[in-house]
Amino acid sequence: MQGDFHYYATYCAAFLAGYTHEESLAICYSAQFVDFCSVTFLKKIKGPETAATTQLQAELMDSRTDHVGLQKITRTWASFHFLPRDLNAEVKGGRRYQNKYRLICGPNGELLADTVELAKEKGLEAAGVAMHVLADTWAHSYFAGTPSLVINNTNYQFYEILGEGDDAETRRIAFRHNPKALDDPVEGKYTNSVYQSSENNVMNLGHGRAGHLPDYSFARYKYLPAWADYKEIIKDNPSDYMHAFCQMVYALRYLRGDIDAFALDTYDWDTVAPYKEEIKEIIERRQLLASKDWKALGEKLSGCTIEAFDIKKYQQEYVDAENNEKNQTYLGRFITAALAQKSMVTNSMAASRNRLAGIGLEVRIRDKG
Amino acid sequence: MTKARRIGYVLTGLIMVIFGTAMAIMPSEVYGVIILSLGLTLMLSGIRSLVYYFTMAKHMVGGLAVLYRGVIVFDIGLFTLSLVDVPLIFIMLYLAGLHGFSGFIDIMRAIESKKMNASWKLNISHGIINVLIALLCLVFLKTVWVATLCYSLGLIYSGIIRIIQAFRRTTVVYIQ
Image 1 (cartoon, one colour):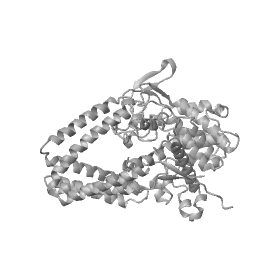
Image 2 (cartoon, rainbow over the protein chains, first blue to last red):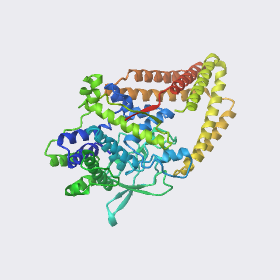
Image 3 (tube, chains in turn brown, purple):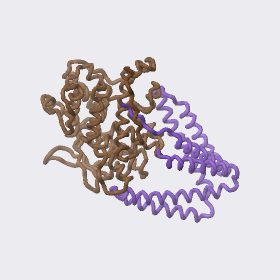
Image 4 (cartoon, rainbow over the protein chains, first blue to last red):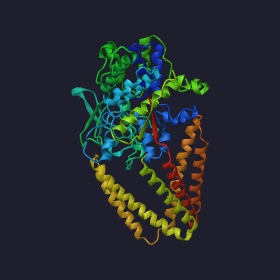
């Protein structure tokens, strides 16, 4: 998913869930910031590098794919962008294959419930982090947040589905590899990562081999994933994005205290109902970025102007704060939430005897009071 | 990281450092050693591909390609070992390509870091050194001692990095 959904659509979901304009802005900023909090950024503000929630392209190119490097990549991408659906999934094959297979992302897994519950009463920044993770479980389904050819590879059997029902047509996608070329949804020209035969090559991380198609809300496509034993998968992004939106509203109502317990596979269709057609239209419009449309909807809902995302917004506050006060700043609270999420996912993986993200060490921090 | 893996990292690191140093001290023996290394590397790469196929890639759509690659690379490795003489130019081009690519990545990384006002000087110096070594290889395409020096230094550097990796803290702190 991109800024259109993580920032503007999250704002809409938060406002519909009952948060104020300012609270919704804080939540959607945090949700979007997950895509910007890299080691490079943390070095710049002198924050803890272990709290990184993403890796820049240059950082990825630079990272070693040895045992330790792979764990670092997996901790970041599996925790925030490709939350594993089932850490105990059974599949034919050895332990090594099984461990990678179990990291395949998907919605409504146990880890999602853990993610949302972890954010409860931890502030708006933690809620934003959880919303980013939740939304990505829908967009990034069927790919894993670890470099893996045997899981994330795709081949030439890749078709875009145009239209719906009986009128639906398929159009074969011939991917290009030029990272500077913009995707062209009219002509059906998309860019993906180059095939790399090495299992752990960073080019085999996540949905690189499917290009940005999982990030486009309008896209419907079918393809042969590497892991599904030659069974075709149909990915219906408009439906998935609508589910993601309604689940965000539900989860945010839980975090706000309107609902006692968070249940998986539950969506707040009723709250969204008055705006369903409008949202459906935004989601299905064939455009690379729907920020303008989501922004207009958000401003219509709240009657307030939604400022554009600015990576520097809270930077100075964090830099200027004394060391013992940094945790009380916006970025400090974001970093705490990110560390907690990363550690929870790492520990859950280690508990399932999957060491692809390393081993977590539990530390309990007692309140001085 | 498990203790066994840490020990493995230290041992392979030490072997690489000793091997690299020996090559730098005895350059006359190096040419044959480089050919031997290339042949063995290809054979090991072939074996790794075969192991990868039987443990993982056979479950993958289109995984047979990995099996074919393993067999072919192993075969090329055997063929390389059987050669009495490999033209020096190929070794130098291999080294130039390796260092040039690493340098390019380092420089790109430094440019991106600089754009974000993060530390970039170490990366840019690594990048420039790598590019200079690549140029050195290209300029002295027919000189044995340059190949020896580049290969030995590269090996020693990799060995040291491997040893450092063995002592890296890999545990994640879980805040509750």
